[in-house]
Amino acid sequence: MKKLLAAAVFFAAFTQAQAQAECAALASMPDLYQACMAAYASAAAGGGGGGGFAAKSWDYFPVKDAGKGEAKAGILYNLDAEAMALSVKARYSVIQGLELAVFWDTPTEDILLNFSVGARYWINENLGFFATGLLPIEEGVEFDLAPGVQYSMKVSDAFEFGSQLALLNLLNDGDMWLSVGLEADFPLGALTPYVGPDISIPLGDGDIGIDINAGVTFAINETFAVDAGIVYATEPGALTILANVGVSF
Image 1 (cartoon, helix red, strand yellow):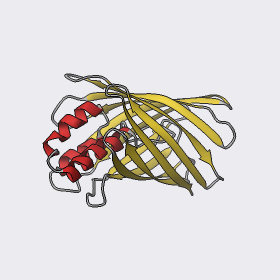
Image 2 (image 1 turned 180 degrees about the vertical axis):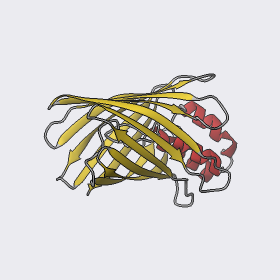
Image 3 (image 1 turned 120 degrees about the vertical axis):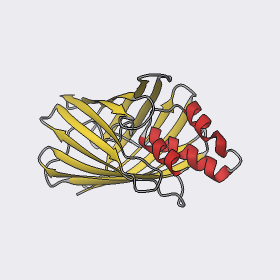
């Protein structure tokens, strides 16, 4: 059970229909079934204004300056599964261009899912590389790695975009997945609306999954920000809503 939940959070390559199939064995135990579905909801919608958790990177844009960091906490609610999940993450730029991050997700207060840790290195304002690892803290969970590349461009003060290409399920059994993420941001003063898809392509058997992300981030000041958004999984038509509070330091 713990292995299933940890994998659900780490890999966002599953559609809602696949999630229901994976969790079907728990149907006779409503609490565990909802926890399982919530884990998939968290995987699909962990981003919130800057890329999703398709490969567990912070976002698709350049890292903060050296010595700067950010922490974010939020909730996610999957309307189809009627299940809520919590998400906490933090990042810090140890030197110029190099960011370290940690991610934690839990569908209920009784289940502690494994941590993921990640690193991103941007060689300039447009191109960066990253890798994220799932830590096998709990018994039955295997280490896995998701490497990838990111590209971003600021077209104007009112428009910028970010993108990501990553491999999932690199070290464990089963087919690998190719994750493609795109995001367009439209800064309007303190408000930044965003929209973009996360596409999961199986390198073997399976169906292509597409999640559409949309929302808005509001910078209260230089330290605090809030964001809210939705993730729509096109295959089953499932909708997840999310909200986050962020603190920069």
